[in-house]
Image 1 (cartoon, rainbow, N blue to C red):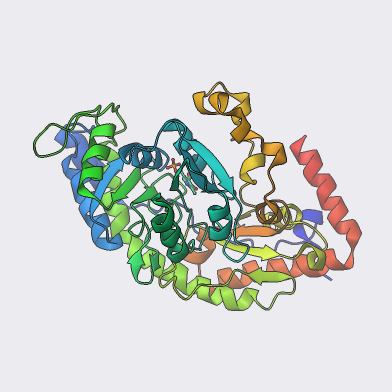
Image 2 (image 1 turned 180 degrees about the vertical axis):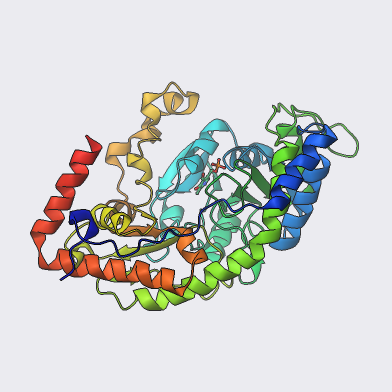
Length: 423
Ligand SMILES: Cc1ncc(COP(=O)(O)O)c(C=O)c1O
């Protein structure tokens, strides 16, 4: 049996997968155009490049009003503040996400309430969300994680029943659709990140889609130092400068031209991956909900069965990496997240509501299973390569499964190497 690369054997793949971000002369020309124009910043809001990008994005994604800003964290803070969700209000967030989803409500003065996930999608579990609702619950932030979408039918039904504001965290879901409707246009707000790793990027950036015109005016004012943006010029807010620069918007105007072809290729190879992976023992492909009509994704996430693999996902991911396959074990569960430990800070919200931040006592079994044992995230670059690139990723996984399941000593050795590496 072939030895694993991490234990000194040959790598499955020597060839590098395509790098990210992609750029060409068009990006250089776009930035040069802005440099020469002398209008580099985001004031007055919106600038020419910013306005053009917002219009193109809404044309692609759907939705009524767009506000471009610094990143995909402030988008969620601004959405909550525009909807007047604030001090002491509770906001439901999934236990499996980047820390931004919980940091944003705190920045708005609200309390993030961590809710367990649905093991089929790894997105927020609507039943667990309903069980967490109190008289202080004002909003919910479903995250469309990896290559999945949260069950938007169930979430919108909850929102109607309990009068909640819905902010869709679409940092991973540019181009995705639910029943033919763009992610981020189903709830009251849709928040998109254009940070470096995202599938449409200017290095940093965030776009907020607003369903309602008045919310959009308020969001524009909040990101533009409080200046009014309504036609009467009377809607002032306690805003600050969260604007994006025209240089970034110019890059986004090129990125969006490339996006449809990239998304199409990713989806074609993801469908090929679904089939190929389902034949590897101990792999659970996350099922595709038929209501998720267009899959357009950030990373391809699946689950391994640690018993069949003879190891947890961290060992498998390290072995995959050394086989030449870009991958990641994903986020930690929100209550264990090293970047999100509010008791270590003097932030106002955790200090004022310490009983809501008792992380040790939280029971989030599905998130813990995904985060500590079974989730594997394949990098999107695999899905911009070729069928051969997908085959290599699957062969590497099969090789790892066969080797580890037949020799418990191999997993122990990898774990020892990992501990040594982290020291
Ligand atoms: C799920 C999720 N939400 C929000 C964000 C925040 O976006 P940004 O980095 O643009 O603030 C990210 C990633 O960075 C993310 O992965």
